[in-house]
Structures are given as C-alpha cells and as structure tokens.
Length: 138
Image (cartoon, rainbow, N blue to C red):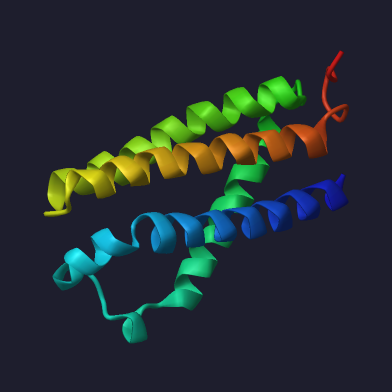
C-alpha cells in the first residue's frame, strides 16, 4: 500500500506541475504580463516554494483519499476530485478575486484550472487505489 501512496503523490506532483506550467504560462501568460505590477518579477519568483506547495497539496490530496474513503475506484476518485476541485478552485480563484485587483479572466481560469487538476488527480487516485478499498470498478 505504501508504494501506491508514493506512486500517487509522485504522479500528481508531475501531472499538476505540467498542468500548472500550461495554465500559468500558455493560457494566462499574457494576462500576467498585462498585470505585471501585481506579481514578483520572474527572477524573484520563489519557484522552489511553489514546487513545495504542489508536493504538500498532492500529499494531502492523496492521504485524504487513501485514508478516509472506504470505496476506492475510478468513480469515487472522480467524485472526490470534482468536490475537492470545486472547493479549492472557488477559494483560489474567487477568494483571490475578492481581495486582489486581478482581472476576472485570471480568477475564472484559476477556478477552472484547479478544478480540472483535481478531477484529473481524482482519476489518477481512482486508478492507482482501485481494488484497495471496499469495492472496485465492476
């Protein structure tokens, strides 16, 4: 079981890091440039800390699913990812929009980006942990 946890955490870290790159450079890059006064210059970004945040998030996401869900399958993983993603994405996107002068498209994209990442994360967990709980995919 320990190997499943390590595989899940490592997998989520890699997948989410790739998705973060796409979301924040390809999709939101122009919006960030247009609002450069709100962000640290690239040379001052704390990339190590951002990777640490992603690793802690992947670990918590995995442990919650692995330890607290009796039924572990693809369907349960997707439902977990969707619920977690909507809650986290809403907090990230619209919570930030409420207190920062960011354009709406950034808040909207943060919300949907986090939600998508979590749904994909739930799918990954469902695939890795299926059959280790009370039911498997039938």
